[in-house]
Length: 491
RNA sequence: GGGGCCGUAGCUCAGUUGGCAGAGCAGGGGCCUUUUAAGCCUCGUGUCGCGGGUUCGAGUCCCGCCGGCCUCACCA
Image (cartoon, rainbow, N blue to C red; front, top):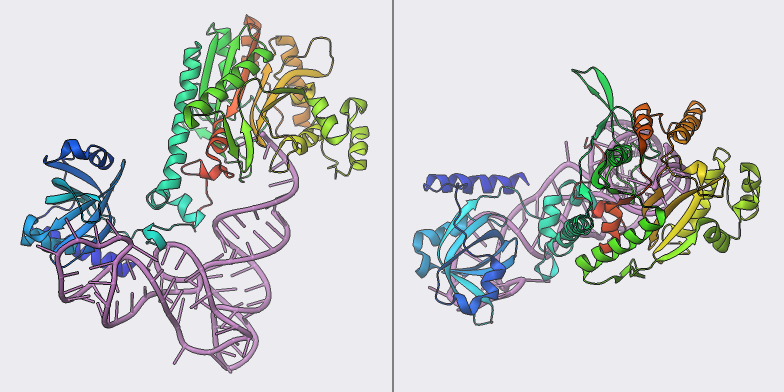
């Protein structure tokens, strides 16, 4: 490595000695590579300037072929000594793969039929001092090591352009089309605090930081929920935020400590309205990103066309595990039933968590029994401290989760707007916290105060953007859809 | 956090039973005015992840550590 870097540094010095600035301030590109190829006939006889990274260089005595790659694609250039002059031709020796060049000339077609720029003059725009991952069979760059690909994403994007760039373009389109969809329905995009004095809206451990001047600890948000609902109180009836959230939890194939979630809230709606909103939105996004609502995820066909299946959580679990948790109203009898059914039951888990575990075997991961897009609805109340109780029940909350292809896409409920009930739920959480559950939610007095002003009945939804990106780009690891995933420190 | 697998040249990878560290591409030098995985001649790739140990001798065996991937647990 140092040898090659030395060689490149010497070339850099040689360029400067020849009075050539290797990092000039201006470029004069007027045509993108893909455009030049597409508009070949129209551009005949015209002098055009293209620019991009030097990806291949084949010297042939008194002429050379090279490929330049820009954001649109790749084009071949032909540098002939007679055309560029002796000095400029000799200077080819000072070029390296990876350099950023600008070339001016006219288009022609080679003997082998490739549309090519016949170069009159060329200029170096940025000298590259580092070695690119090298060519393999077929002439493509090869960079497979996932650690390098994630730590040095720029190399990944250069080397794995055909696979990597489309993923992040798709992700951008997911965000754009989600905004289009919500904006068209009158939702207002807002930004709420990432630094929060109390964290809430989800069950998770937070990152803690400190503000020096105010001399107080602050939490990086685990969810924007409680702020968005304050805005409903304030009269913004449809609101959403595309929020980076931070959870101080483990890292694995479907979890990154910082991740992106879209949360939206609609006043005068309930969770059934939200189901319709969500299935319409996901179908719209798939249509915009993929051009269809039918595709494969990890080999399993997925069809996001509305309406999606709607199954009460209890029935889904009963159908696929044979266990009816309503028959076991307390934690211990359910644990015994699960034990009989072959589950290894963690004695620390509360009843709600046991039900969660049953749900996961039905719906999560590659072994999921149910992979079609589906809303599982009506969840145990004690798992859902911010959701409204279902009328006519004592232990059921109006909550649903959306799934497809074994991925959990989002979580929604009819929002709890009874301030006294909310206070009681928070106090219940506080007892769990005192009992050692450090993920139980904190009592947020200011939020209760907002509810006392009056929150209209509302439905809300939170959906993971990273997981949606995984679904629509057919990736099985969240690290493939996050440009710079959280990594361990390099030591 | 537990378990499994992995870490050798810039990249992708070989490396036998413990016996002089290799290939292709990339790189240096030379030839070649329509090549395209260009071709031909030629030269060198190195803290074998790091630190110990065993051994006459360790890339190879043992221990510890670092990092990655998979998996289980937990969370979303």
